[in-house]
Amino acid sequence: MTMKLLTRNIFYKILGIGLILVLVSFWLWWRFIFTSPGRVFSDMLNTSLRTSSFTKRLIEPNDNQQFDQIIQAQSGSQNIARSMTFISRSGNSAASVTTESIGTPRDDYVRYVDIKTEQKNENGEPLDFSSILKVWAKTPITPDGQSVAGQLFNDTLMGIVPKANLSKVARQELLGFMAEHQVYKPDYGKLKRVWRDGRSVYVYDVEVNTEAYVALLKKFGNLVNISRLENIRPDQYKNSPPLQFTFTIDVLSRQLVQVAYTGTDRKEQYSGFGALVTNAIPAKAISIEELQNRLQNLQR
Image 1 (cartoon, one colour):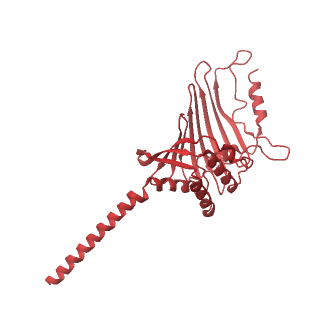
Image 2 (tube, one colour):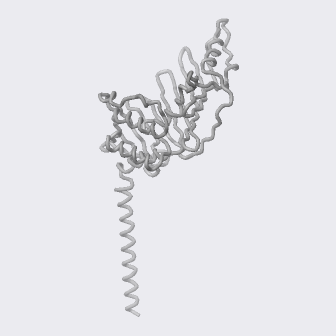
Image 3 (cartoon, rainbow, N blue to C red):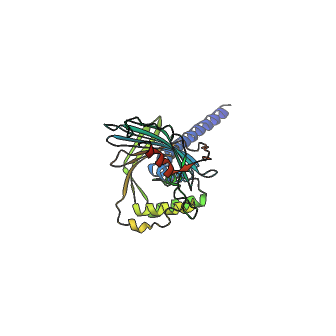
């Protein structure tokens, strides 16, 4: 009986020691591997290339002007982006304009949602914008039948860090290019770990190699059928100084949640990853030129 108790005690001790070793090993893996700054940064690049949809908010305040834009973008089953843009100006000529845009890889649609201004027409009467509000306008078509735009959708995907839902082969190609050409150079010596909205995030100072970045966008564009950079030569940017940003990355999700432009107040905030974006393309639309002509006529 005593021998059995001794054996059982030894078994539990071994089991306890084994459990402690497992927990210690897990903690070491979590602390020094899974949450290491280098691992989190590289995983963010990979995650960005596996993103089917996201929301981007661009904030750019100036001395007397505020620019605030929210864009929802989706790639894959439906390639589309929708934005709401608010621009306001203070001072003697205070005014504000709210526009809505819908973009596809080829076309852009835009309409005025709200306009407020103290400006008056030639007769000294307040301007009445009711005739142009909620009227969709479409980007022009060239004589060969091709649109000259697609700017909203394409520019949203081709951000500081490109975002799309690519195949494994395509991701590996781009990630390999990023590593080989050191497109992004985070300064781990200045790394900060802080809490934001109840989540742990890393804040990196990042240097972006301009020439390599343009080459990356060109390769990315080829993979997602964006042709606007096909005539751009990356070597034209060989002597350009590197771009400077601050990246904020969620430690657990590996998502890029903010990009701040060094030396300016411009910020890009990201959220809503994977959320379904459903937007219908406007069935009727006038030309951009006609919409602008209507706006100008209101001032007479």
